Amino acid sequence: MFAPPSDTRTLLRDIARDRLRSEIMRGSLCPGDRLDDEELAARLGCSRTPVREALADLAHLGLVELRANRYTRVAVPAREDVVPALQALGLLFGGVVRVTVPRLGDRSRSTVFRRLGVLLDCLEAPSWQPSADAATPIYRTFIDECRNPMLTAALRGSLDGLTFRLRHRDLESALPWQDIRTGVVALRVAVDVRDGRLAERATWSAHLLPDPDGHEA
Image 1 (cartoon, helix red, strand yellow):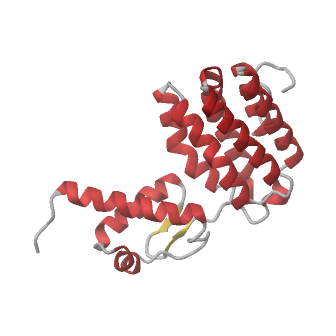
Image 2 (spheres, helix red, strand yellow; image 1 turned 60 degrees about the vertical axis):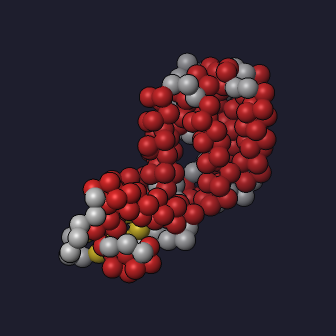
């Protein structure tokens, strides 16, 4: 059998990984769903090898669980991981926010301000999918606007895995939502006045971290 060039194989692996990642993050594939590489290969129109490699990549991100000779499935978030995941996300996001907020252009600042308002509306009756749909564009905007490539690479590489760990069926009772909402309100104010340090403190508060400077957010 003719073996395709290595770059073609890599491309198929990337396509399969991105497609499956998207389906997991938007909920088309749910936590606990079994993943059969033969069925996935047929659906994605490729061989089983790039699918297996894509599943291994997604397992590294924490989106897939691989158990040799037992099962491959979409990962099932654990309740005990919810707060640590949110805090880890806050640590990474806080650094990006601090260096980016003072440099936001008027259009981007208005976009972030509006999107934070949408997130606040979602937090009135919090659940994973609406909150994730509202929060992810905010993270992405800051990633796009940040001029520190190392910070953005760290956040971009961790974003899906950490936000997925928040997708627990008892999320509504697992987090102090009023505290989170208060932090988001403070972040919105900081964005409005272009204050990077205030934005970092607010970000830490919204992600249930102690204030980095020992002040109230």
